[in-house]
Amino acid sequence: MTNFKDKAEGTALVAGGTAAGAGLSATIGGMGLVGGFGGVAIGAAPVTAAGAVVGAAAYGAKKAIDNQDLSALGAVAAGAVTGAGVSTIVGGMGLAVAGTAVGVGMAPVAAVGAVVGLAGYGLKKLFDKK
Image 1 (cartoon, one colour):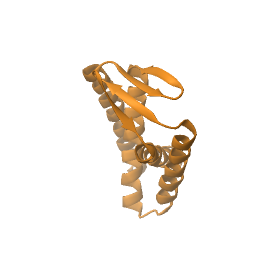
Image 2: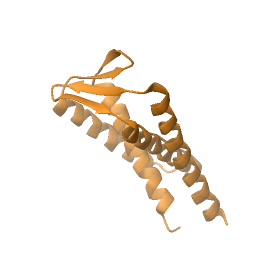
Image 3: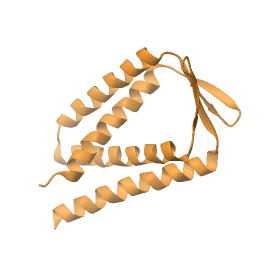
Image 4: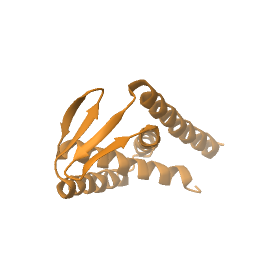
């Protein structure tokens, strides 16, 4: 029974994150990412997917704390290093939202990488057979 409850909780967090991402996209509207590679529009699908990633990361954080599982820190560290690597390769970027733009340096990209790593840990725990 506990396994079913855990799976339902994880599924609810991912679904809630997905809904929050869709709502955020609908509220804010047009966004774009600008860099040395040019500019690209960010529509509803990537923002909705980002919400799902955040929901999976929330589940991963909860499971890591509940189980006192230090392997989650490895996933976070690997994600952060990967994010820093992506920032190094891609270079200076900016996020354009509602007529204004902000610079995106290495720290925010590494932080996003850490969240993606934790989301991977959360999805692994969600699909574990145990």
